[in-house]
Structure formats: structure tokens, C-alpha cells
Image (cartoon, rainbow over all chains, first blue to last red; front, side, top):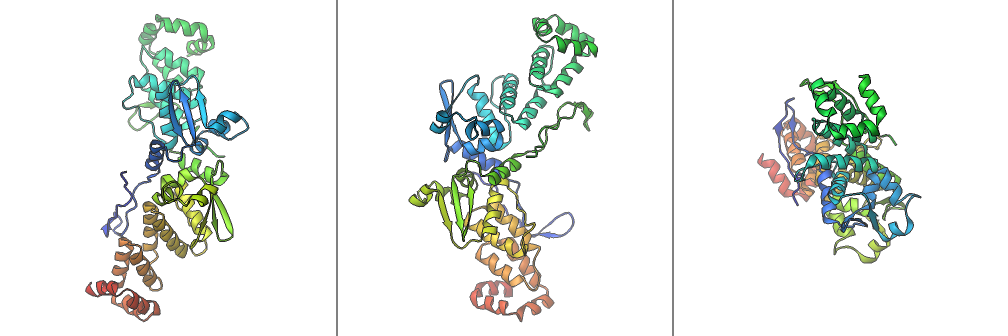
Length: 208
Length: 208
């Protein structure tokens, strides 16, 4: 275990020329809670995703997500399932769920080491929306705004519409305001599908 | 519940002139864990301090303090006491323990509203040392360095010696390097008591 909280510097002079005898390191709670997730110490719930499982702590999840709070502690709780400490998740991938768990504990999202992080990030956004984790959703929104190109814009626009992501939606509209890019996108099958499935979105685009 | 994570600002121009479509608010985990402590949702341990009780979550405490980890989950755990979920604390004041709990959940220490916060802060330092919470101890050390005067220096020096607080110890020594202040302190009964109880500390002071 690496700890950064024993650093003490004596008598250095800070910029205002006062003597500082103690240096308090940055907050270490993310590291502590990240270790709690990894070590599974005192874990009281197991999630089954596909044929894999991961253990976690109900109170941490309830603190960080109103949906987990309701599912694990509220009246929505499925009695036997929650009491037995095993929750089966459908429509979820383990890589995505682990990223969501890690965010719940550490408040940080790392896509490092994930194959095709752009697609994974979209899936994490969907999961964040499902569990009511607003800040995680915004982190994903910020990330996918960086990934808009001729190949991705239709998928991102559809995702933005479905999950009420105003920022990415506006970013897609701005991208399509360029006639050259719009022409390149309009001939794709994805665009034609979006035209049929989300006519109101297309009307908005035309209005621009 | 006040949540700050739904703020989205569209298309503002950041300093590097790039368009930002999404604004991610600051980390909100301290607030979430603070609410967990207040609501006691899923709490699984009760601490008795004097004739008062306070509920908490074992996994949070274990994540934040190696001493709690050992007491609540490790081989040091007192079987029946921990299993029943009630832990009686001796040599502790509820106000001090609540501040320590709040720090464990939120990583912040507030002395606001506490009578005689200087004395309370010294007690929290002692509690932080007892539970191996290094950063909280440093926050207290930083605070008590601001409280050194003719009336407090002896108490703080004794505390610093007993709990291995090098910063406050040096701050006291620097304070006593002023002959006028040293003379004022030397006539106090506290100084004479320290002289008798910590002769090595006095030798260090003389050496300066």
C-alpha cells in the first residue's frame, strides 16, 4: 500500500514569507476507497454480469447512486435477491460495470487499457444514466465530444438524443453545420436510419 | 439533497479558444459520503461514547483507518463485540469522535461551532494518532501551529513530543527562541512540570 500522507516538511518558507511547519498532502480518500474496492474487505454484495462476478459494498454504492440506494436499501429492493447479497445484472458488460464501480469508489474514470475506449465510453455513459450518476455521465459526455467525426457523429447524435446529452448533441450539430461534412455523413446508412427513427431530431438539424 | 452535478454549460469558449460543450463539476464524493454518514443508510456498527451513540459503516472506517480495519475486520477484532455491531469507546469524547468520523467520510475537518476549538483540535489530533489517520493528524498539527502563544506553548510542546509531531515541536522551539517569550513561559507551572516529565525535551531546547 502506497500512502502519501506522511510527508512533513519543516520550516519551509511559503510565498507569503510565513514559516510553514506542516505540509498537508492532497486528499487521499480516492486511493483509500479504491483499495477498499480492490481488497473487497467487508464486501456485502456480489454482482453477476454474464458469467463473471464482482464484489462491492452496498453503502458505498447507495451513497453514490440514487438508483443503487433504491435497489439495495429502498422499497424497490427485490427482497430475496438483495438479502442473499447477489444481484444479477442484465444488459451490462463487466468491463463497463467495473469502470462504473471504480468511479463510484474513486470519483475518477480511466479508459486506459480498454480496447476501443471510444465505444466503451459510450457504454459507460449509458450505464451512468441508468444508475443516476450525473457527474460520471458528464465526464463521458465530455469525452465523446472529442470523438466526433464523419464515422461517429450519427451514433453519437442518436445516443445524445436518447440519453438527453445536450452538450454532445450541440457538438454534433456544430460538426454537421459544415456542408462538406454533412454531405459525407448524409450518404451513410446510419444517417438514413436516424432520419427514419428520429424525425424530430432531423427537423432540428434542418432548422439550423 | 443538494446536488451540483447537473450543471451543463454549452458552447462557452475556454481560454484556449476551443469550444467546450460540457462542463464537469468538481468531485462530489465528499458530499455523497457525508450524506451517507448523516442518513446512516445501511450502517452496520454503533459506537458508544459515554452515554451517547453514533452509527457508522464498517467498510468506510476500514478504508480510512488501518486501526479500524484491524479492529472491525482483522484478527484483532473482538469477536462478540464486533459481531454484535456495538463498539464501546473509552477515553473519547463524542464531539471529538464525530469530527473524526466526519473526516473519515468527507476528508474534511470543520471546527466550526465547537466551543474552544483549539483544545478540541488537540483532542482530534490525539484521536487521529490513535486511529492511524495520518492526514487528519497533519491537518490538526497545521492548525495548532497557529495557536502557539505564551499560554499554550507548553501544552502544545508536550503534545507534540508525545505524538511525534515534528512540525509543531519545531514551531514551539522557534517561539521559545525569543528570550522575552521564553522568560514569560519559564515561570509557569506547566513549564516546570514539563521540565520534570520530559528532561530530554528540555535538553533539546537548551541545545538550541
